[in-house]
Image (cartoon, rainbow, N blue to C red; front, top):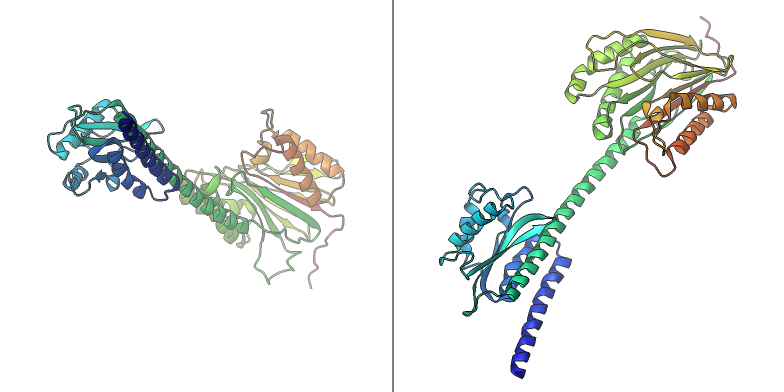
Length: 446
């Protein structure tokens, strides 16, 4: 009896060591194939069979032919080649249903030879499951000796199959993490490129101060603002006294596609501005140029285009479906909207745009913004809306603050409304232009 207990104890230690070695390989593996190579060998020794076979499938149900593993490999090499040569349709389009499993078991029993059939006492199998989805089958065949498979064999076989399921799931998560890391790197590069496309500083324009900021909901966004001299450098008056184009826009959508379209539109618009045309003509031509590209992307762009002449303080503008900028008049203490009829860029070929103009007086403040500001959602579910923006803007202007101070105050009020720990749902951009008290006189002809 003592000899029998010693033998049982040795058998248990052997099982323990085999399972420990497989668990260690699972914890430390960096190559799924190397781990799966061990499975038939360990399984065969664990259950005391003459051989073992591991069949795994991709997540979409196709046979994972690179990971067909058997022990002993030389004995079952022909069967593995035949199994790998079978089309997926022949394997029953593996889906984990009983019919598909039975079809696979029949194919395996047929290819293994020796007339082994599941359930005849020679061939034993169990499913490999990963995240509630069947990802394969683990087979052992021809137990050593005359004793049939027992409950202990079945438990050990299932335990190994579960470890294989964990390995497959871990490999899936590792690959997903690597894909996410690659996407994150690409987004970071895209964000750097977009940051270079937006002005890194506001221009020096005679008689006014300008401040601007874009806060993206994602690393790459579709908001756009720009300051563009309307004439080539070296011609006309000095840069500060020359006429400047002030633009703000929003590409429909978020993320990389919106950012790429924004970059495309920026290049088109900067080339068009040098033509010297009026704002309504600029938007008309830009709409024509961008039709094909925007049609392919199934996106549209809202854009407010204006140009400001510091010598006359005349602001000309045209609007392509964007939120009208707000202007606070120091003389009245009231806020007005600057708007002109026009459809979004990319919607209608040959669209015409109306032009408007206004004279900016000393102390007037102009606010350009995107819908990410007015549509920002607070922690109670309500939106910031334009009326809140107008109230905050009017309060800031009455305080006789500078352009940058007004911009900082508006973003601070927006952040307080949204909540300190909450992310914006859409890109939010604002540009503030304030006219100084010192007037800039028009240059006299020589």
